[in-house]
Image (cartoon, rainbow, N blue to C red; front, side, top):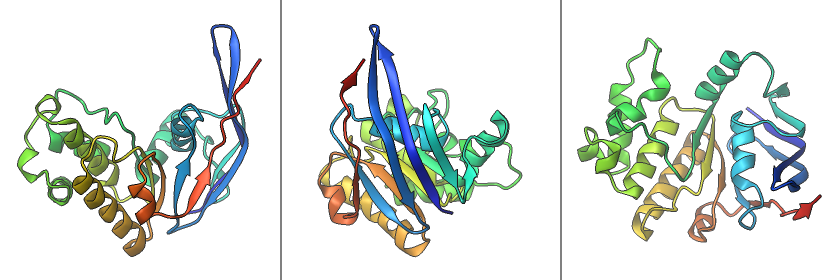
Length: 219
């Protein structure tokens, strides 16, 4: 699956001022490619990932998957596409507090006939969380919650992973272990990866970068 962004622009209004995050940004990510999205705080890296995931819309420009408009179809069709084709994990985890770690991981499979329990447990084991499967989010550390969120993003084996600051709450050892796992997915299964990070360790695993310039335009 080829991801293509063509002349994407996004702005927002704050206290009566229009602030431009980015303008005419273009990017191509081919199957098996991995790129790190760089840019200063406030340049719109998280917003761009959310646009690709279909959680926000750009003000102008195109988001294409294999030449098809990302926002084509009704809301249900777009949601089904996201669940099947995109694994998205941001730095805030967004786990449901009433569900255990395993139940949170299994959320993308809700409504599907196939039983993903074994795969969910295997992912938790890969992230060193096999003893936390029945813990609730409030019983987990910040780093553990982030790893649960990443396992959730990987559950359905999507061809594209979007990762927003995946190592933000992890120590050095856990960061390297997580990045090594994502690197293995990228190399062995040809999963495409686009991640935003300020962690220099990320560049040791994924040296290909693209910079999102901060426009700083106020109107």
